[in-house]
Amino acid sequence: MDYKAALVNGIDSNSKGNSDAVTSYIHTAPVTLQRKPFLQPEGDVRLSHTGTPRANIAATYDQPEGSQAGNWAKEHQNQTVLQQHCDYFDQDKDGIIWPLDTFRGLYALGFNSLFCILSVFVVHFAFSYPTVPGHLPDPLFRIYLKNIHKDKHGSDSGTYDNEGRFVPQKFEDIFSKYADDKDYITARDVLNMLKGQRLLADPFGWMGTMTEWLTTYILLWPEDGRMMKEDIRKLYDGSLFEEIAKERKHSSK
Image (cartoon, rainbow, N blue to C red; front, top):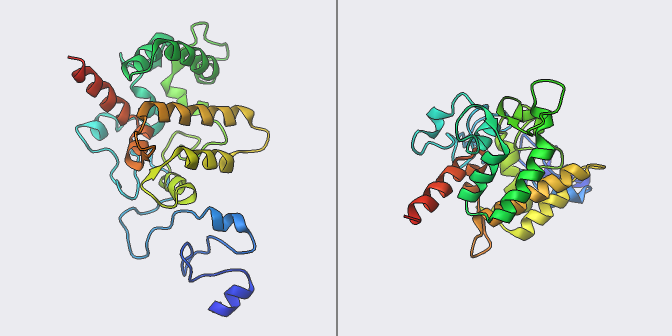
């Protein structure tokens, strides 16, 4: 198809966002122009197979090897990225997150006691049962990391797949679709993302995603209103929790 024919059909294959091999937007569907997905520059193989989920590393275009600082990748190679995200709260590493674990973990991150208590009730009430190994609810509302993938909800970015793996394409799409390819995302961008990712008849997913991003903003609390892309990536694999907790512990001495 030549350029004139492409325009007639509502497709501009020479514009930014489309490539010779892939048509990612068409003019007759404006939403595809407004939310252009991430396209890796042609010939750049820094991050191969962006649509293939990574089981144990949060690989992005800027960090194709994931979190390599310290021994993070080695210590967590036997966990999915979603399990890594939650591992910080499992302080005794028994594969079970108790309500008290969640409270202590959040408090160590700098959240006040009231917020921690409220979060414990919300998180464990909503996310305990899907992870239990049997059919009966856990009376202590514990969360079992082995089955944490069952807690994935709708209306999110899709960066975690249904098995708890990390999908680079979906992560990059957050910033290409809603942050104009910047290396940070603002509260306004997040609101646009929440609106853009909403699924029909999914109030639980809407509230879950909104609460997660609100908590993320409070945790980072950027002075300039910019949540950096690398911080968000490290949040997905949980390494950011470890960094912030250690920094706060050292600063308090």
